[in-house]
Length: 311
Length: 175
Image 1 (cartoon, rainbow over the protein chains, first blue to last red):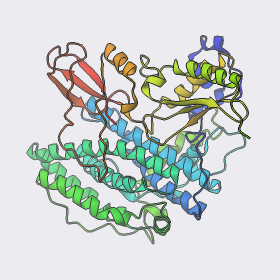
Image 2 (image 1 turned 60 degrees about the horizontal axis):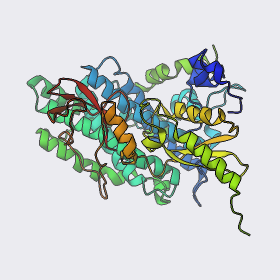
Image 3 (image 1 turned 30 degrees about the horizontal axis):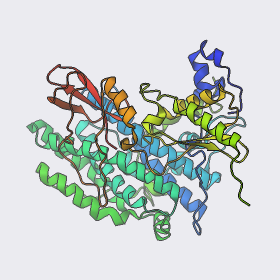
């Protein structure tokens, strides 16, 4: 920001104080500063920039897409407290996504979609709003419609358990930026997992209807469970280099943790077949479920209508 | 050759540090960013600019932009034209960093203060029962309080209610 700040003008418009007088920033929010400002984003020795970038997209897209899904509960949850809780979880994930997408762009700028010259859209927003479906690297697990509250809690329990296990290992990454993002994420995901775990137990041990819905929910989310632990070549490569985490390596930890919840809740691990691939691949390959298109359409429509950030 | 900072540089830094330390949190204005533990460092850069280092409380904290702008304004209004706000992610912010003065200010404004944050060497244990916290109602000091939600109006707070005075109150979460 190189403008000269006019303090008096602030009193005429609160917006001027927020934007520093640069109206063009409004379309994409008031916070245009790089969330990694001043952080050393130099790559660790021997790490392939393109691979690191793809890996950051995988972790970032998981959080971004799931954050968007969860945000759809805002004003629709069973009561105000759950509304706020789910919005908080979505916000934490959005924050993680933002840092990871910025890291992805810093490692390999070539994957950031080109926008009209002078567009104020930062790299992480360009990645979130201007990539097409096949360029997203999230697992399919985060894509489906929310369903009822039981489906949402069952899915959140599994996802937060999985992501917490990955992030705990990622704290040891040789990439100091990924390590720092992971250390923060661990703290946040601990709250998410406890929240979902408590609701899972409450619904399982609540009324006949809540238990019926929870059991149905578990069966509904389970076909995409195995995909969480399928190792993509990029994940294998970065795990080998000490930068990333092989998701297959956390499968046992996740299963043990979930078994604790199932055992206390008096439920069983579902015995349903895993969903097959889409054509030749799965989410990490850019092959997504049919829920992904409508989700992206909703998430991206405003940004795409105004690529220069003005209207 | 060792170059010691000139007295002028030191004095400038001290002035800048004092100004930055007065900037308050946009969501909890009874706290300064220093008391909250978000303000980590104020120093001088290579070209003489003032470097202000902050650590976000939560990954998605929407107040970070406002904090940056407020820091810039506070310093620019006092003649520091070249200011650079930097982010430090490691170590991650902890509620343990809230100062004693910050805690006193929170209590004074009816907000319950965090206990010690959990430290994990191994896997993070699952907690299926509400986290036991020894809290008292910030209004009436009753210990008859119950958790409403681990999530509140900002990312850093949980919601409680007091069974004695029947008022709701916020608690800054341990993290």
